[in-house]
Image (tube, rainbow, N blue to C red; front, side, top):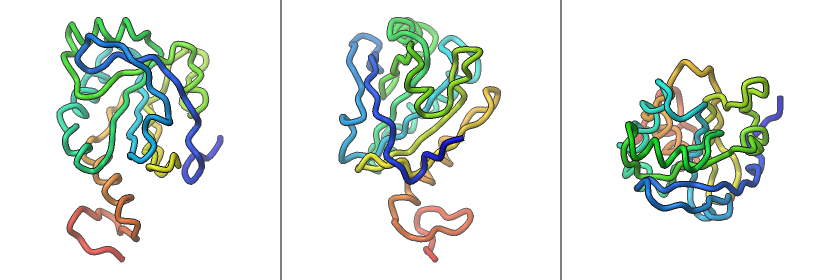
Length: 173
C-alpha cells in the first residue's frame, strides 16, 4: 500500500457538474494551487450514506472556505448522473461533483475497489503547494465526520504540534 501523506498529490483532470446542478466544468489539481483542497471519494450516486456526507459537507462549506479550502466530491458516476442527482433528491450543493468514470483518479489515490468499480470512502486534504497532508480511507458503510475534517484542516494550518483532541483556540505543544 502506497503512502500519500507528505508526497505530491497525484494529478487529476475530471469533468464536473457544479453544485447548482446546471453547469458543467472541469477540475484539475492545478486549479487548487494556492488553496487547501478537501477531496473526498464516495462509492456511487443515488445511494444511502453518500447523500448524508455530501450534504453535510455542503452545509459547512462556508467554514471550509473561511479556512481557504475548497471541497471536491468524486465518484465513478458520470457528470450527467451527478447532475440528475443534484436536480433530484440530493439538492443543490456548494461545491462541484467530479466524474471519475475511468476510475483512474480513484486508482491513483489508492481507493478503488477494482472488482466492484467503485471507490472506498477516501478523503484527502491537499495543501496549497499540492502536497497531501491528510488521508483517511474507510469502509463503505460508515460516513465521515465533517467536524473532524474541519478540525484536522485547522490543525494542519497551524503548522504546529497539535495534541489529541486539539481544537481551534487550544494551546499547541
